[in-house]
Image (spheres, rainbow, N blue to C red):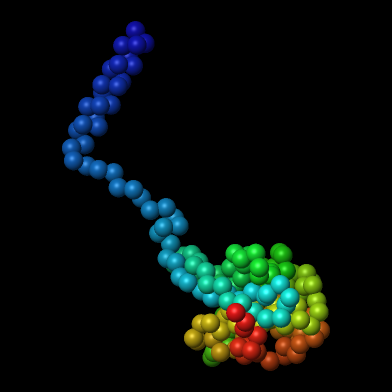
Length: 174
C-alpha cells in the first residue's frame, strides 16, 4: 500500500513537471553577484614602517551605501598581502565618512587611538594610510580624522592633526 502511494506521488510529480512546458529555471544571482563592485586603492605600510604600498582591491558597494566608509572598512580589514603591515588597530570601527568642500571627515571608533601601537613612524603610516586611501577619490583633497565625532590634535602624540591633512606622495613606495 505504501509502495503504491509512493509510485502515485512520483508519477504525479512527473506529470506536474512535464506540464511546465518549455519553462526553464534561470539561476538567480546571489546577493554578492547582484551587488555592484568597484575597485579602490588602499595603502598599507611596508614591514619596516618606512612607507606606504598601494593595494588595489575590489569591494562590494550595496546601493545607498557610503563608498568612502566601505573603502576604510577594507583598509581596517588589513592587506591581502603577507608582506604588508596592518595600519589600523584591531577592533577599529569606521563610524562614517562625510565629504564637504574637498575635505573628507573620517570618523573612527576610539580603538583607532587607544589600540594604536604608537611611535612616530607608526603614527605617520596609520595617518597617511587613511589620508592617501581617501585622496584616491578625485573629490577628496584633504582628510580630517575624528574619534567618535571629535577632531584629533594628534593620534599618538607625534603629529599635528589640528588641520585636515593632504596626500603624502613622498611616503608611497613600490
